[in-house]
Length: 468
Image 1 (tube, rainbow, N blue to C red):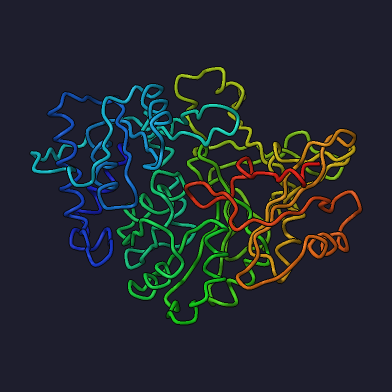
Image 2: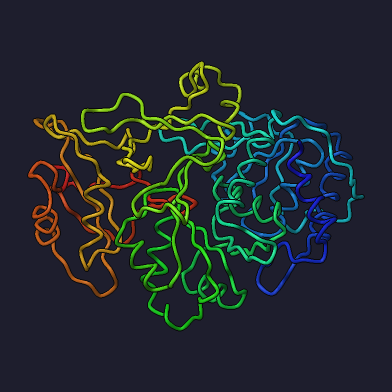
């Protein structure tokens, strides 16, 4: 059940096909397989054994895949790390995981090491990757994803969007994150498709890559879709090769979804998942697609709502082959997250319609309670994105001495657009109940984002005038 067997099988079948493309360079599946074998040989020569943890701290370059499959090949456990981490953060990842080594130098990997083509035997339930969560409530916890978790999730993704060996998947999502790792790298390798890498997301560079490499599958988070849609030079590039686009990581505003589909002539399918679920848990199918929905549970996965309100809103719980083994060396956190029947609590609030499609309402922890009334930030953000001047928006709760929380909105405007606080406030006020609209509105050049491009609400700074 070693996940690395997907690479060896594809190399044996389609060794000459391009596995990775970066700039003008290509790496075939035979070359990637040999490079992974050299990494495995180097690790074994240094005394590492199956079950040892190895940090992989590399950007979206070919060497990430070499290191990833090389560690798995020798039976090790990959600990993916954002190369932008600060020393204090690196120390936590290394000490918590007990990593014996960190691979962080593309130029030195794998060198002229003697290749070891053997693939270590691993059980499906053996840990393959320890993926650290974002740590919104303290230090990041390591989600243990097994070989079976990741192999099955890649297969599910391949079937959902009908990936073939002739496809070219754009690799803009960070490979150290579950979305890019499973839906990009592992899905491409299991299929024999080409992953066209781009180390940094810049709209013009992405559009040029789509045209040059004839990209057929684009996978991104909502801010990427918004950036491509609002790119000034969008019409300069031929993007007709796009067959399907996948959005995840956060809710995709309907205004962005419809605008992107119209501009690019390509269907966008939304999915849902978390690091702890490998990540894909639900997905829209072409035959049952509802805009604004995260679709229905994928094959072999169950979802249900816990503690639903009278309005039918409850917390999503997930059970199935995609749910992590647990949090690395953290039994208490594991028991809190996964009950005795295997249900994982997601922390996301949703409702279900008559067809069984799930609609995310918001994060449980981002719910704003204003004077006893529930305000779901996503509902307000959807309206803000409809404003013709708004490029990005995030709604957060601001402490209030009488109401408990007040509704605040941080807004980034489109280039050349002009709008005032009162204009934005009244735009929302005209469309929602009086307790919902943001009394506090302020403008920013950019909203803070994480490594995948997801807006980080916890990092939004509230101006003094907006907080009083």
